[in-house]
Amino acid sequence: MDTTKKNYKPLIGSLYTNFIFQGMAAIILSQNLNALMDSWQATVQQVTLVISGIGLGRVLILYFAGYFSDKFGRKKTVQLGIISYLIFFIGILISQNYLQGLFFALFAGFSNAFLDTSTYPTLMEAYPNEKDNSSLSVLNKAFISLGQFILPLLTRFMLDNGIYYGLVFIGCALGLFLNLLYISRLGFPQRIETDLSEAAIISENDHDTAEKKPLFKVEGIALLVFSFTCVSTFNIFILWVPSFAESLNLMNHSNSLVLVSAYSIGSFASVFLTSLIVKRGVAPTLLIVWCTVISLVLLIGMTLFPSVPMFLAASIGIGVFAAGGIWQLGLAVLLELFSKGKGRITSYYSIATSVSVMVIPYITGQLEKINVSMIFGLNIVLTAIGVVAAVIIRYRYKKVTSEWEANTEEIVALKEVAE
Image (cartoon, rainbow, N blue to C red; front, side, top):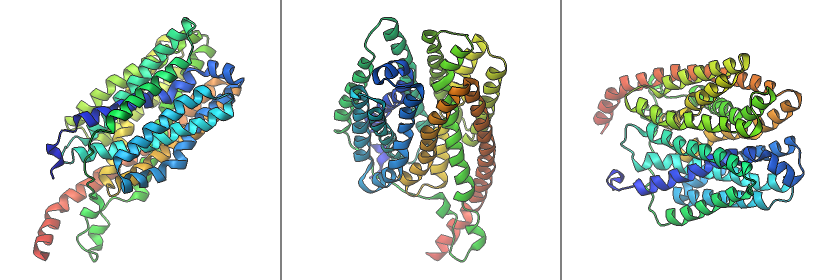
């Protein structure tokens, strides 16, 4: 059956809807930091430990999630992801202390893992012949950004009007429940697995050609490093830029939350720009390099020359260049090079992300005791490492794909002779 002839638009729309709530879940704890401190009688460090629990949950479940996605299907994996988010949103709300909050934060990590290892492969399987699979994956980020744009505005409105913060948690749970009912009625595409690394192998005795396939220990590792640093760049930013602005007496607490919305505007707009650029033929790996370099420049600029205009420019810029879809582009490149067992490969990439989400909030929470500016110093270092990884990815991708394309006709000819 040709899956491209089926209409998967309702399914893709429902999958994208999940990412609105994923975007909210990523920042909802930090946005309600003071309210949760009061509710749990907890310190800043204890609440940031709860935030780290999201990453811990991802690490604990990711490999299993990738296996489950490949073994039992994308649909069941998506359903598990939505159910896990329901437990997270309701669980945080009913928690009596930060330890209970930490337990329920694990379920947000579980959900991240289940949704990542099912949604991205589903996009590629729904449209297996599309040349712009990268742009399809990037659009996920638009909906994450939409959630991260809406939530700070809601939080500020509720804060200014004295409205119970838990209503947002309840609203998220209700929206996810309705989407769970809808997606359970939809059909998913059949799994299709190919492997570019195997396509370059003519025979077991052809040592020269076998060496030209992608090497996970080189470009694979570089992509995992990029996954860690990319997510660290924008997660540190959205978690701590309000506090950084407040510590420098640039903004009060209520106004500083708007910086996250400014970041989200940049991220949301950039997704469509990134998708357009990729469709126009610009190599995803080249885009990754330039976006990472510009992110580094922006972080250095706001740290050395702090001001309200500079913080606003950096907020929009980090949204555009760090969080505008380059993480998804990196995953698309990884799945292109190593696409056999997409769920498992996606889990590797997401594990690197999970380690970041797990350790970075804790580390930055400890640095906050000393000085918030040290947090952004750490961000600069991690982003610089990301630049190095991006350059390696760009170089190796060009080398591997050019060699593979150069030998494609020879491979086909030899297979025809063998047949």
